[in-house]
Image 1: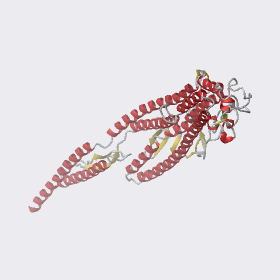
Image 2: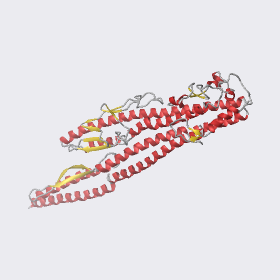
Image 3: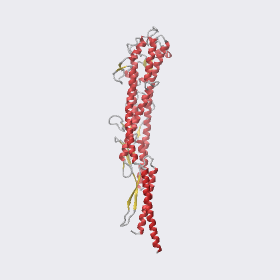
Image 4: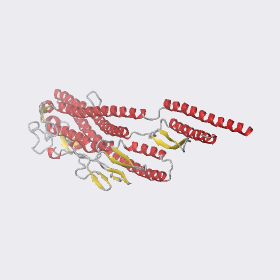
Length: 484
Protein backbone atom coordinates (compact mmCIF):
# COMPACT_ATOMS: atom_id res chain seq x y z
CA UNK A 1 0.00 0.00 0.00
CA UNK A 2 1.37 3.45 -0.93
CA UNK A 3 1.51 6.38 1.45
CA UNK A 4 -1.27 8.11 -0.50
CA UNK A 5 -3.52 5.04 -0.21
CA UNK A 6 -2.86 4.87 3.52
CA UNK A 7 -3.81 8.52 3.81
CA UNK A 8 -7.01 7.94 1.79
CA UNK A 9 -8.05 5.01 3.95
CA UNK A 10 -7.45 7.01 7.15
CA UNK A 11 -9.41 9.98 5.84
CA UNK A 12 -12.33 7.73 4.90
CA UNK A 13 -12.20 6.32 8.43
CA UNK A 14 -12.27 9.82 9.89
CA UNK A 15 -15.28 10.69 7.74
CA UNK A 16 -17.12 7.51 8.76
CA UNK A 17 -16.35 8.12 12.45
CA UNK A 18 -17.69 11.67 12.19
CA UNK A 19 -20.91 10.39 10.60
CA UNK A 20 -21.18 7.71 13.28
CA UNK A 21 -20.82 10.33 16.04
CA UNK A 22 -23.60 12.36 14.40
CA UNK A 23 -25.87 9.29 14.36
CA UNK A 24 -25.18 8.56 18.05
CA UNK A 25 -25.92 12.17 19.01
CA UNK A 26 -29.24 12.00 17.12
CA UNK A 27 -30.17 8.78 18.95
CA UNK A 28 -29.36 10.22 22.36
CA UNK A 29 -31.22 13.47 21.64
CA UNK A 30 -34.35 11.54 20.60
CA UNK A 31 -34.29 8.92 23.32
CA UNK A 32 -37.74 10.03 24.53
CA UNK A 33 -39.24 11.06 21.18
CA UNK A 34 -42.40 9.12 20.24
CA UNK A 35 -42.15 7.38 16.90
CA UNK A 36 -38.38 7.72 16.70
CA UNK A 37 -36.56 4.73 15.23
CA UNK A 38 -32.98 4.07 16.33
CA UNK A 39 -30.50 5.10 13.64
CA UNK A 40 -27.59 2.93 12.60
CA UNK A 41 -24.73 3.84 10.26
CA UNK A 42 -24.39 1.38 7.41
CA UNK A 43 -20.82 1.09 6.08
CA UNK A 44 -18.96 -1.19 3.71
CA UNK A 45 -15.33 -1.79 2.84
CA UNK A 46 -13.97 0.10 -0.12
CA UNK A 47 -11.46 -2.04 -2.07
CA UNK A 48 -9.56 -1.23 -5.21
CA UNK A 49 -7.08 -3.97 -5.95
CA UNK A 50 -4.92 -4.30 -2.84
CA UNK A 51 -5.99 -0.96 -1.45
CA UNK A 52 -8.98 -0.27 0.80
CA UNK A 53 -10.89 2.11 2.98
CA UNK A 54 -14.44 2.49 4.28
CA UNK A 55 -17.51 3.89 2.54
CA UNK A 56 -20.69 5.10 4.23
CA UNK A 57 -23.63 3.39 2.52
CA UNK A 58 -26.27 5.34 4.41
CA UNK A 59 -28.23 5.53 7.64
CA UNK A 60 -30.82 2.89 8.48
CA UNK A 61 -33.81 3.07 10.83
CA UNK A 62 -34.25 0.11 13.20
CA UNK A 63 -37.81 -1.16 13.62
CA UNK A 64 -39.68 -4.30 14.54
CA UNK A 65 -42.92 -4.24 12.50
CA UNK A 66 -44.29 -7.36 14.18
CA UNK A 67 -43.79 -6.02 17.71
CA UNK A 68 -45.11 -2.59 16.75
CA UNK A 69 -48.21 -4.19 15.23
CA UNK A 70 -48.82 -6.26 18.34
CA UNK A 71 -48.39 -3.22 20.56
CA UNK A 72 -50.87 -1.24 18.45
CA UNK A 73 -53.41 -4.06 18.58
CA UNK A 74 -53.03 -4.16 22.35
CA UNK A 75 -53.46 -0.37 22.47
CA UNK A 76 -56.67 -0.61 20.45
CA UNK A 77 -57.98 -3.33 22.77
CA UNK A 78 -57.07 -1.18 25.77
CA UNK A 79 -58.85 1.82 24.27
CA UNK A 80 -61.96 -0.27 23.61
CA UNK A 81 -62.04 -1.69 27.14
CA UNK A 82 -61.25 1.66 28.76
CA UNK A 83 -64.10 3.39 26.92
CA UNK A 84 -66.64 0.71 27.89
CA UNK A 85 -65.50 0.52 31.52
CA UNK A 86 -65.50 4.30 31.91
CA UNK A 87 -69.04 4.81 30.65
CA UNK A 88 -70.42 1.82 32.59
CA UNK A 89 -68.88 3.24 35.77
CA UNK A 90 -70.62 6.56 35.08
CA UNK A 91 -73.99 4.84 34.65
CA UNK A 92 -73.48 2.92 37.89
CA UNK A 93 -72.62 6.18 39.67
CA UNK A 94 -75.79 7.76 38.27
CA UNK A 95 -77.93 4.98 39.75
CA UNK A 96 -76.06 5.15 43.05
CA UNK A 97 -75.38 2.53 45.69
CA UNK A 98 -77.80 2.22 48.65
CA UNK A 99 -75.44 4.17 50.90
CA UNK A 100 -75.15 7.04 48.40
CA UNK A 101 -77.34 10.11 49.14
CA UNK A 102 -80.00 10.49 46.45
CA UNK A 103 -79.63 6.93 45.13
CA UNK A 104 -82.57 5.24 43.43
CA UNK A 105 -82.85 2.57 46.11
CA UNK A 106 -82.72 5.31 48.75
CA UNK A 107 -85.74 7.00 47.15
CA UNK A 108 -87.69 3.72 47.16
CA UNK A 109 -86.82 3.19 50.84
CA UNK A 110 -87.95 6.72 51.66
CA UNK A 111 -91.24 6.24 49.80
CA UNK A 112 -91.98 3.05 51.75
CA UNK A 113 -91.06 4.76 55.03
CA UNK A 114 -93.44 7.65 54.27
CA UNK A 115 -96.24 5.19 53.57
CA UNK A 116 -95.58 3.47 56.91
CA UNK A 117 -95.69 6.82 58.69
CA UNK A 118 -98.91 7.92 56.95
CA UNK A 119 -100.61 4.56 57.54
CA UNK A 120 -100.01 4.96 61.28
CA UNK A 121 -101.73 8.39 61.22
CA UNK A 122 -103.96 8.50 58.11
CA UNK A 123 -105.70 11.60 59.44
CA UNK A 124 -102.44 13.63 59.41
CA UNK A 125 -102.29 15.94 56.44
CA UNK A 126 -98.56 16.55 56.94
CA UNK A 127 -97.85 12.83 56.71
CA UNK A 128 -99.95 12.52 53.57
CA UNK A 129 -98.04 15.46 52.14
CA UNK A 130 -94.85 13.58 53.05
CA UNK A 131 -96.03 10.62 50.94
CA UNK A 132 -96.82 12.95 48.02
CA UNK A 133 -93.46 14.69 48.19
CA UNK A 134 -91.60 11.39 48.45
CA UNK A 135 -93.50 10.04 45.43
CA UNK A 136 -92.64 13.19 43.49
CA UNK A 137 -88.98 12.88 44.43
CA UNK A 138 -89.00 9.23 43.34
CA UNK A 139 -90.56 10.10 39.98
CA UNK A 140 -88.12 12.99 39.64
CA UNK A 141 -85.20 10.68 40.35
CA UNK A 142 -86.34 8.31 37.60
CA UNK A 143 -86.71 11.32 35.28
CA UNK A 144 -83.21 12.50 36.18
CA UNK A 145 -81.66 9.07 35.64
CA UNK A 146 -83.24 8.90 32.19
CA UNK A 147 -81.90 12.36 31.35
CA UNK A 148 -78.46 11.33 32.62
CA UNK A 149 -78.36 8.21 30.47
CA UNK A 150 -79.42 10.17 27.39
CA UNK A 151 -76.74 12.76 28.16
CA UNK A 152 -74.17 9.97 28.13
CA UNK A 153 -75.54 8.78 24.77
CA UNK A 154 -75.28 12.31 23.40
CA UNK A 155 -71.73 12.67 24.71
CA UNK A 156 -70.73 9.38 23.07
CA UNK A 157 -72.32 10.55 19.80
CA UNK A 158 -70.31 13.79 19.90
CA UNK A 159 -67.14 11.91 20.79
CA UNK A 160 -67.66 9.75 17.71
CA UNK A 161 -67.79 12.91 15.61
CA UNK A 162 -64.58 14.19 17.19
CA UNK A 163 -62.76 10.87 16.70
CA UNK A 164 -63.88 10.67 13.06
CA UNK A 165 -62.45 14.16 12.45
CA UNK A 166 -59.18 13.10 14.11
CA UNK A 167 -59.07 9.97 11.96
CA UNK A 168 -59.63 11.91 8.73
CA UNK A 169 -57.05 14.60 9.57
CA UNK A 170 -54.45 12.04 10.60
CA UNK A 171 -54.93 9.89 7.50
CA UNK A 172 -54.61 12.97 5.30
CA UNK A 173 -51.38 13.96 7.11
CA UNK A 174 -49.98 10.43 6.76
CA UNK A 175 -50.80 10.55 3.04
CA UNK A 176 -48.99 13.90 2.68
CA UNK A 177 -45.95 12.40 4.39
CA UNK A 178 -46.11 9.47 1.96
CA UNK A 179 -45.71 11.94 -0.90
CA UNK A 180 -42.82 13.72 0.85
CA UNK A 181 -41.10 10.40 1.60
CA UNK A 182 -41.41 9.25 -2.01
CA UNK A 183 -39.96 12.53 -3.25
CA UNK A 184 -37.07 12.40 -0.77
CA UNK A 185 -36.23 8.79 -1.66
CA UNK A 186 -36.33 9.55 -5.40
CA UNK A 187 -33.83 12.39 -4.85
CA UNK A 188 -31.60 10.16 -2.73
CA UNK A 189 -32.25 12.22 0.40
CA UNK A 190 -32.72 11.02 3.97
CA UNK A 191 -36.43 10.34 4.63
CA UNK A 192 -36.04 8.76 8.06
CA UNK A 193 -37.23 11.84 9.94
CA UNK A 194 -40.39 11.87 7.81
CA UNK A 195 -40.94 8.20 8.65
CA UNK A 196 -40.63 9.04 12.35
CA UNK A 197 -43.36 11.67 11.99
CA UNK A 198 -45.50 9.19 10.11
CA UNK A 199 -45.12 6.52 12.78
CA UNK A 200 -46.10 9.00 15.48
CA UNK A 201 -49.26 9.90 13.53
CA UNK A 202 -50.15 6.24 13.03
CA UNK A 203 -49.76 5.69 16.77
CA UNK A 204 -52.25 8.51 17.49
CA UNK A 205 -55.02 6.69 15.59
CA UNK A 206 -54.05 3.11 16.43
CA UNK A 207 -56.20 3.10 19.59
CA UNK A 208 -59.20 4.35 17.58
CA UNK A 209 -59.14 1.46 15.12
CA UNK A 210 -56.84 -1.60 14.93
CA UNK A 211 -54.25 -0.95 12.21
CA UNK A 212 -52.16 -3.10 9.86
CA UNK A 213 -49.19 -1.39 8.20
CA UNK A 214 -47.10 -2.21 5.14
CA UNK A 215 -44.26 -0.11 3.70
CA UNK A 216 -43.04 -0.46 0.10
CA UNK A 217 -39.53 0.03 -1.31
CA UNK A 218 -40.21 3.70 -1.91
CA UNK A 219 -40.89 4.16 1.81
CA UNK A 220 -44.63 4.76 1.35
CA UNK A 221 -46.97 3.20 3.87
CA UNK A 222 -50.27 1.39 3.28
CA UNK A 223 -52.76 1.10 6.14
CA UNK A 224 -55.64 -1.32 6.70
CA UNK A 225 -57.77 -2.20 9.69
CA UNK A 226 -57.49 -5.63 11.23
CA UNK A 227 -60.67 -6.70 9.38
CA UNK A 228 -59.53 -5.45 5.99
CA UNK A 229 -61.05 -1.97 5.68
CA UNK A 230 -58.64 0.17 3.64
CA UNK A 231 -57.50 3.29 5.49
CA UNK A 232 -54.70 4.43 3.18
CA UNK A 233 -53.87 2.78 -0.11
CA UNK A 234 -52.73 5.39 -2.58
CA UNK A 235 -55.29 7.84 -1.22
CA UNK A 236 -56.64 8.18 2.34
CA UNK A 237 -60.10 6.84 3.18
CA UNK A 238 -62.71 9.44 4.07
CA UNK A 239 -64.82 8.61 7.11
CA UNK A 240 -68.28 10.13 7.41
CA UNK A 241 -70.47 10.73 10.47
CA UNK A 242 -73.13 13.29 11.39
CA UNK A 243 -73.45 14.12 15.11
CA UNK A 244 -76.96 14.48 16.52
CA UNK A 245 -78.06 17.68 18.23
CA UNK A 246 -80.25 15.92 20.81
CA UNK A 247 -81.03 12.30 21.68
CA UNK A 248 -84.27 10.96 23.15
CA UNK A 249 -84.81 7.46 24.63
CA UNK A 250 -86.76 6.22 21.60
CA UNK A 251 -84.10 7.32 19.07
CA UNK A 252 -81.98 4.48 17.69
CA UNK A 253 -79.54 3.85 14.87
CA UNK A 254 -81.63 0.88 13.69
CA UNK A 255 -84.62 3.18 13.12
CA UNK A 256 -82.49 5.70 11.24
CA UNK A 257 -82.70 8.35 13.97
CA UNK A 258 -78.93 8.38 14.61
CA UNK A 259 -76.01 8.54 12.22
CA UNK A 260 -73.95 5.51 11.35
CA UNK A 261 -70.39 5.44 10.05
CA UNK A 262 -69.44 5.56 6.37
CA UNK A 263 -66.11 4.96 4.63
CA UNK A 264 -65.82 6.69 1.27
CA UNK A 265 -69.59 7.14 1.29
CA UNK A 266 -70.42 3.49 1.95
CA UNK A 267 -72.08 2.44 5.24
CA UNK A 268 -69.98 0.35 7.60
CA UNK A 269 -71.58 -2.25 9.87
CA UNK A 270 -69.96 -2.08 13.30
CA UNK A 271 -71.99 -4.63 15.25
CA UNK A 272 -72.55 -8.36 14.81
CA UNK A 273 -70.14 -11.25 14.34
CA UNK A 274 -68.59 -9.69 11.24
CA UNK A 275 -68.69 -6.05 12.24
CA UNK A 276 -65.91 -3.82 10.90
CA UNK A 277 -63.43 -1.71 12.89
CA UNK A 278 -63.81 -3.93 15.95
CA UNK A 279 -61.49 -3.47 18.92
CA UNK A 280 -60.77 0.27 19.19
CA UNK A 281 -62.21 3.34 20.90
CA UNK A 282 -64.36 4.24 17.90
CA UNK A 283 -66.25 0.94 17.94
CA UNK A 284 -66.58 1.18 21.73
CA UNK A 285 -68.21 4.63 21.45
CA UNK A 286 -70.79 3.23 19.04
CA UNK A 287 -71.36 0.38 21.51
CA UNK A 288 -71.90 2.91 24.31
CA UNK A 289 -74.36 4.93 22.24
CA UNK A 290 -76.29 2.06 20.66
CA UNK A 291 -76.04 -0.80 23.16
CA UNK A 292 -74.80 -0.03 26.67
CA UNK A 293 -76.91 3.07 27.27
CA UNK A 294 -79.99 1.70 25.48
CA UNK A 295 -79.80 -1.39 27.70
CA UNK A 296 -79.55 0.78 30.82
CA UNK A 297 -82.47 2.93 29.62
CA UNK A 298 -84.60 -0.16 28.94
CA UNK A 299 -83.91 -1.50 32.42
CA UNK A 300 -84.69 1.88 33.97
CA UNK A 301 -87.96 2.03 31.99
CA UNK A 302 -88.67 -1.50 33.28
CA UNK A 303 -88.31 -0.28 36.86
CA UNK A 304 -90.67 2.63 36.13
CA UNK A 305 -93.14 0.27 34.42
CA UNK A 306 -93.22 -2.09 37.39
CA UNK A 307 -93.69 0.78 39.82
CA UNK A 308 -96.62 2.19 37.83
CA UNK A 309 -98.14 -1.29 37.31
CA UNK A 310 -98.12 -2.02 41.05
CA UNK A 311 -99.95 1.24 41.75
CA UNK A 312 -102.39 0.41 38.89
CA UNK A 313 -103.26 -3.01 40.35
CA UNK A 314 -107.05 -3.51 39.96
CA UNK A 315 -107.45 -4.71 43.53
CA UNK A 316 -105.65 -1.75 45.10
CA UNK A 317 -107.83 1.33 44.52
CA UNK A 318 -111.55 0.66 43.94
CA UNK A 319 -112.17 4.27 42.90
CA UNK A 320 -110.27 3.79 39.63
CA UNK A 321 -111.67 2.47 36.37
CA UNK A 322 -109.84 -0.09 34.17
CA UNK A 323 -108.21 2.63 32.04
CA UNK A 324 -107.61 5.19 34.79
CA UNK A 325 -104.01 5.89 35.84
CA UNK A 326 -102.96 5.14 39.39
CA UNK A 327 -100.55 7.07 41.59
CA UNK A 328 -97.81 7.10 38.95
CA UNK A 329 -98.75 8.07 35.39
CA UNK A 330 -97.21 8.18 31.94
CA UNK A 331 -97.35 11.98 31.55
CA UNK A 332 -100.92 11.87 32.88
CA UNK A 333 -102.03 8.68 31.15
CA UNK A 334 -102.07 5.11 32.38
CA UNK A 335 -98.67 3.44 31.86
CA UNK A 336 -98.65 0.66 29.27
CA UNK A 337 -96.08 -1.97 28.35
CA UNK A 338 -96.79 -1.11 24.71
CA UNK A 339 -95.28 2.33 25.26
CA UNK A 340 -92.60 1.43 27.80
CA UNK A 341 -89.60 2.98 25.99
CA UNK A 342 -88.77 6.28 27.66
CA UNK A 343 -91.34 5.81 30.43
CA UNK A 344 -88.83 6.72 33.14
CA UNK A 345 -88.49 10.16 31.55
CA UNK A 346 -92.28 10.67 31.40
CA UNK A 347 -93.26 9.27 34.80
CA UNK A 348 -95.33 11.72 36.86
CA UNK A 349 -97.32 11.61 40.10
CA UNK A 350 -101.05 11.73 39.42
CA UNK A 351 -102.19 15.36 39.47
CA UNK A 352 -105.36 14.34 41.37
CA UNK A 353 -103.23 13.96 44.51
CA UNK A 354 -101.31 17.25 44.17
CA UNK A 355 -102.88 20.44 45.57
CA UNK A 356 -100.55 22.50 43.38
CA UNK A 357 -102.29 21.00 40.33
CA UNK A 358 -105.84 21.22 41.67
CA UNK A 359 -105.78 17.85 43.43
CA UNK A 360 -105.95 16.84 47.09
CA UNK A 361 -103.57 14.78 49.24
CA UNK A 362 -106.46 12.97 50.96
CA UNK A 363 -106.92 11.01 47.70
CA UNK A 364 -103.75 9.13 48.66
CA UNK A 365 -105.82 7.74 51.56
CA UNK A 366 -109.35 7.67 50.13
CA UNK A 367 -108.74 6.82 46.47
CA UNK A 368 -107.42 8.76 43.51
CA UNK A 369 -110.82 8.67 41.82
CA UNK A 370 -112.73 9.67 44.99
CA UNK A 371 -115.04 12.65 44.59
CA UNK A 372 -115.15 13.51 48.27
CA UNK A 373 -113.04 12.98 51.37
CA UNK A 374 -113.80 9.77 53.22
CA UNK A 375 -113.00 8.34 56.64
CA UNK A 376 -109.87 10.17 57.84
CA UNK A 377 -108.92 7.28 60.07
CA UNK A 378 -108.99 4.56 57.39
CA UNK A 379 -105.42 3.42 56.58
CA UNK A 380 -106.41 0.55 54.25
CA UNK A 381 -105.34 2.12 50.93
CA UNK A 382 -102.06 3.43 52.34
CA UNK A 383 -101.31 -0.01 53.78
CA UNK A 384 -102.27 -1.56 50.46
CA UNK A 385 -99.81 0.64 48.60
CA UNK A 386 -97.04 -0.36 51.00
CA UNK A 387 -97.89 -4.04 50.80
CA UNK A 388 -97.96 -4.10 47.00
CA UNK A 389 -94.55 -2.40 46.89
CA UNK A 390 -93.13 -5.01 49.23
CA UNK A 391 -94.90 -7.98 47.65
CA UNK A 392 -92.91 -10.52 45.64
CA UNK A 393 -94.54 -10.61 42.21
CA UNK A 394 -93.42 -11.18 38.60
CA UNK A 395 -91.92 -8.02 37.12
CA UNK A 396 -94.31 -6.17 34.82
CA UNK A 397 -91.57 -5.40 32.29
CA UNK A 398 -90.19 -8.03 29.91
CA UNK A 399 -86.73 -6.43 30.17
CA UNK A 400 -86.15 -8.30 33.44
CA UNK A 401 -86.59 -11.99 34.09
CA UNK A 402 -89.96 -13.21 35.30
CA UNK A 403 -88.60 -13.93 38.78
CA UNK A 404 -90.88 -12.70 41.55
CA UNK A 405 -89.38 -9.83 43.49
CA UNK A 406 -90.37 -6.77 45.50
CA UNK A 407 -90.00 -3.23 44.22
CA UNK A 408 -86.89 -2.59 46.27
CA UNK A 409 -85.38 -5.88 45.08
CA UNK A 410 -86.03 -4.87 41.47
CA UNK A 411 -84.24 -1.57 42.07
CA UNK A 412 -81.30 -3.47 43.59
CA UNK A 413 -81.24 -5.86 40.61
CA UNK A 414 -81.07 -2.91 38.23
CA UNK A 415 -77.98 -1.62 40.04
CA UNK A 416 -76.50 -5.13 40.28
CA UNK A 417 -76.82 -5.77 36.54
CA UNK A 418 -75.03 -2.52 35.74
CA UNK A 419 -72.33 -3.21 38.34
CA UNK A 420 -71.78 -6.69 36.86
CA UNK A 421 -71.32 -5.26 33.37
CA UNK A 422 -68.90 -2.69 34.76
CA UNK A 423 -66.97 -5.39 36.63
CA UNK A 424 -66.47 -7.50 33.49
CA UNK A 425 -65.51 -4.40 31.50
CA UNK A 426 -62.88 -3.49 34.09
CA UNK A 427 -61.55 -7.06 34.03
CA UNK A 428 -61.18 -6.75 30.24
CA UNK A 429 -59.43 -3.41 30.76
CA UNK A 430 -57.00 -4.89 33.28
CA UNK A 431 -56.10 -7.72 30.90
CA UNK A 432 -55.72 -5.38 27.91
CA UNK A 433 -53.65 -2.87 29.91
CA UNK A 434 -51.32 -5.64 31.08
CA UNK A 435 -50.79 -6.82 27.52
CA UNK A 436 -50.17 -3.29 26.30
CA UNK A 437 -47.70 -2.53 29.09
CA UNK A 438 -45.74 -5.72 28.37
CA UNK A 439 -45.52 -5.05 24.64
CA UNK A 440 -44.72 -1.38 25.15
CA UNK A 441 -41.88 -2.29 27.50
CA UNK A 442 -40.53 -4.76 24.95
CA UNK A 443 -40.72 -2.09 22.28
CA UNK A 444 -38.90 0.42 24.46
CA UNK A 445 -36.13 -2.10 25.09
CA UNK A 446 -35.56 -2.10 21.35
CA UNK A 447 -35.45 1.69 21.29
CA UNK A 448 -32.64 4.04 22.16
CA UNK A 449 -30.36 2.57 24.83
CA UNK A 450 -28.44 5.56 26.17
CA UNK A 451 -25.89 3.36 27.92
CA UNK A 452 -25.29 1.47 24.70
CA UNK A 453 -24.98 4.73 22.79
CA UNK A 454 -22.35 5.93 25.27
CA UNK A 455 -20.38 2.74 24.64
CA UNK A 456 -20.63 3.29 20.89
CA UNK A 457 -19.42 6.84 21.36
CA UNK A 458 -16.31 5.57 23.14
CA UNK A 459 -15.69 3.13 20.28
CA UNK A 460 -16.14 5.93 17.76
CA UNK A 461 -13.72 8.10 19.71
CA UNK A 462 -11.14 5.30 19.69
CA UNK A 463 -11.62 4.72 15.97
CA UNK A 464 -11.37 8.43 15.23
CA UNK A 465 -8.19 8.74 17.27
CA UNK A 466 -6.64 5.73 15.50
CA UNK A 467 -7.42 7.13 12.07
CA UNK A 468 -6.13 10.54 13.13
CA UNK A 469 -2.93 8.84 14.29
CA UNK A 470 -2.55 7.25 10.85
CA UNK A 471 -2.95 10.66 9.22
CA UNK A 472 -0.37 12.11 11.63
CA UNK A 473 2.06 9.27 10.89
CA UNK A 474 1.65 9.72 7.14
CA UNK A 475 2.31 13.41 7.59
CA UNK A 476 5.56 12.65 9.46
CA UNK A 477 6.62 10.20 6.75
CA UNK A 478 5.99 12.79 4.05
CA UNK A 479 7.98 15.38 6.03
CA UNK A 480 10.93 12.97 6.20
CA UNK A 481 10.74 12.40 2.45
CA UNK A 482 10.69 16.12 1.84
CA UNK A 483 13.88 16.56 3.94
CA UNK A 484 15.89 14.01 1.87
